[in-house]
Image 1: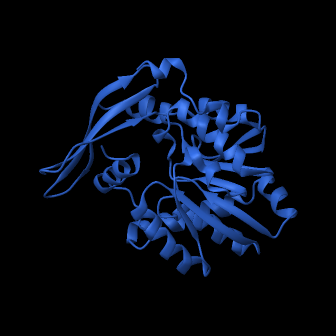
Image 2: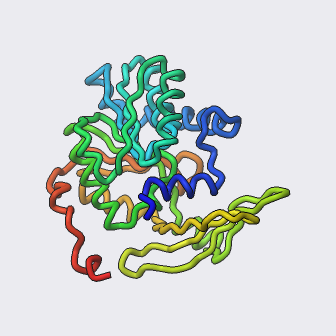
Image 3: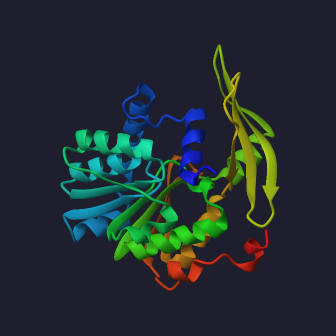
Length: 281
């Protein structure tokens, strides 16, 4: 059976996502990310954090090819701050790109770690800023997101910040667009990538979708997604951090969730075992 990392690699090979910073689309996405990070540094909590130090440690979880993490590091460099950047992801091929490109863009070494974000605390790093950029929350159902918040809380210094780029999918997908049982992800003259609704988990709240490229003899990639609204994501964050804020970027329902002051009361070990409701499925 394929590992989670292998399944994610398969999915991202199928679904068009401008994550290669060396491509024209990827370059445009990086330029946009850099603009967003410059705006992020104007937030009160970032200003307070940077007042007390001129060198910071940044951990980019679900970092992929590093577009978000490198953009944040570059914006910090522009502000006169030295940055130690670590990019964490389950996809080895994405990390290989991040390692080479990040060094070229920042002029210094970038550390990469092949690991699960829910176990970020196990890599032995302490960070001033943890970033999750690239709208990655749907890969985590509420049970897994609780583990992610707990793990990040363990990694952060007491005055550290967790920054999540997200959009309100409850509003955008279910209200503005309408949930599509069949969806054309991309279409060209010779091929079509489509995804189809194939199931729903009541206990996890996840929608199961099968993605396939047509015409193709390749395998179908089946993935589970949780379509977060910003309100419940920020509420869950509040259980692990003393304060939560939201900085709109592209539109009123898309931007950065910021959290500060980890409570440190729910440790990763407290959430290591699935509750009965999940063990019985």
